[in-house]
Amino acid sequence: MRNVLCGLVGLVGFWVAGCSDPVALDPASSVTDLLVVPSSATLEVGDTVRFSALAFSLTRPVSSPVTWISADPSVASVAGTGLVTAHGPGRTRITARAGGISRNADIWVRTPVTELVIGPDSIPLLVGWEGPVVVLTRAVGGDTLTPADHTYTSTDPAIAAVGAEGLGGGWAAGRAWILVSTGSLMGAATVVVEDRPIRLTVGTQSERAPGIRRVKTVRIERGVVTTERIHGDSLPLSSLDLLNAGLDWSPDGKTLVYSCGRDRACLWSEDSTGALSDEDGVYAPAWWDNRTIVYTRHSGAMKSGGPGPVLLPAEPGWYPAVSDGRLAYMCRAEDPFYPYSDSQLCLLEPDGSSRLVFDCARNPAWSPDGASLAFLCGYLYVHSIQTRAIRALRLPSSFPLAVCWTPDNRTVAVADYDGRLRLLDVVSGWSMAPIAAFGERIDALAWAP
Image (tube, rainbow, N blue to C red):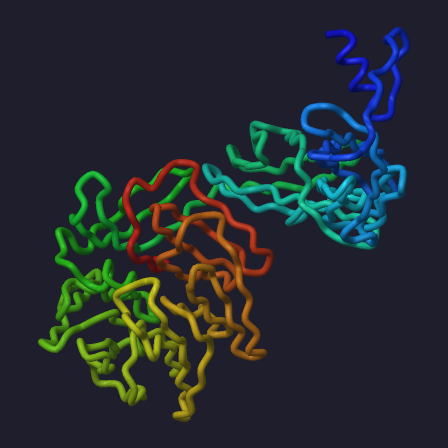
């Protein structure tokens, strides 16, 4: 065993003191295989590493000239001796050739890290909620990368704790620092934890008894979900679960309309209840103003119920959302009841003009000030009415189903397919979720007044 080991070490270009004479090499008359050592390498810009190649004829090593080639010398070059030098970030492959046989080795080159970047600088949390600490590294030239290894520490775990994966949780009102280190680099972000509740009106289905549908207003405080009021219970199949829509408070916050069947919308207020029926269908009802409701019929034609004058599109439309006379709706829908079907988002202005906003959209929702329109299509998208710019925000969760704005005009609540609820800052893209599970699948949601 000692002679075999020493022989192999000597053949790849090294010599170990104490080994016996190396095995005599045969001529390179028939090279049948080539061994490249190492098989891959990860380097930083400026690093070097030497590769070796050993030729075989059947099972015996033979002496044969080796040539070396790099697929991309701008990433890493290789000398005739097998010495590889890293020049720029990226991936390349070096090839060794001997006697008609070629073998490859992969090279990854990364830029040396010079700075940790933690976002956002100030992380907002609620007691009982958790959110990720987003860490990037800034390298030479300003490139940002996601490093593989971090160490996270909280200066006050009683206020804000942080786990090994960088998930921070709020436990008490106050302020703490999250410290992040990678190698010799360190960064920090402030965590501000508030102890305040949020209130949502939701359309849900029980996880333990699927098909039991209800509409209720809930209070989430310190991560605990409490039902404040049930508006509708044991509801039939409706656009709440067919379209993840059809739940809307009137602009004055006094009356709730919600879908309570394929051809019926229910109304709820502190003083009374009522209903809007249409044998041709009532899908995704939404308020036009405090007295008038717009909805979609089976055919896709929009209709209004109430005394107020409304401007509706001539083409079929789904998911109506209204803000100051502006109507956003899903137009040219391949199948409005299938969340992965092709659909487009259109906007009808008060003057009767219309335009296409985006060619993939569901569940439009207006910000309270009417300046932004959020909608879903795998991602969360936010459209600025003034600039017409559209931002895509990826959610750290499964397929999003429903979205609504909070009163601050920069935060949205999003419910996903797995029943997870999140609050997401549309400016920074940062999100948080209750530490405890919601306990029911959320089909539709609206911010409770």
